[in-house]
Amino acid sequence: MAIILKEKTADVDILMPPVNFSMVEDGIYRSGLPQPSNFSFLKTLNLRCIIYLCPEPYPEENLKFLEANNIRLFQFGIEGKTEPTVSLLKDAIMDALKILVDVRNHPVLIHCKRGKHRTGCLVGCLRKLQNWCLASVFEEYQRFAGVKSRETDKKFIESFDVLSLRHCLYSIIYRYHGYGSKKRRLLYKEDNVQKPQMTSV
Image 1 (cartoon, rainbow, N blue to C red):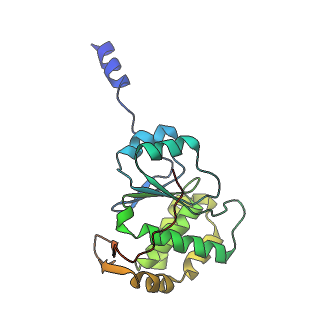
Image 2: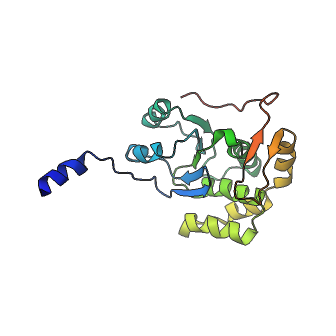
Image 3: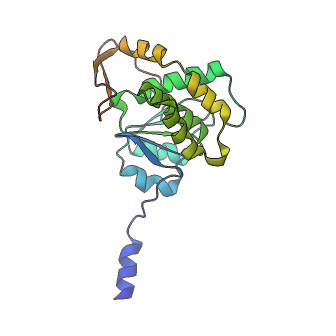
């Protein structure tokens, strides 16, 4: 009987999430770079797109997984080891946020290499857009960054101008469900909206 049970469990996919995986909001997830061992888990999320925050080319195995599962890839090349200039980081985060808040891209996974600094900056700026207090934003950032927390990241999040983002979003929003509700979603008007550029998979 024990042998039969072992044979059955051998056929079952082990669902292993990527490193630093967590739900940010309903339909929004964060993590480090997914490995092939994580693909079975990612399938359960029914992802529509991935926001990749690194400049390095996306791994070939991952691209094949995205193509096989009809998942779009949006890449914003933010340097990790060397700190990017504030203007470059601001532009990349701003563009990534526009993708992130568009409900048509949900469910969406945000990730960089380890899911700490670049991902933490993007999520931190999203929290500011959601009117979180700065202490809560930093607590969440710290939880994922751990001992490798960067003061420069916190300063960037603190100084990030969400008003300019809101102004941009308000110009194209067709219907807006307020960020005080449980469903924090933005819906865009289908016509007259320039589609964001994305990498082909």
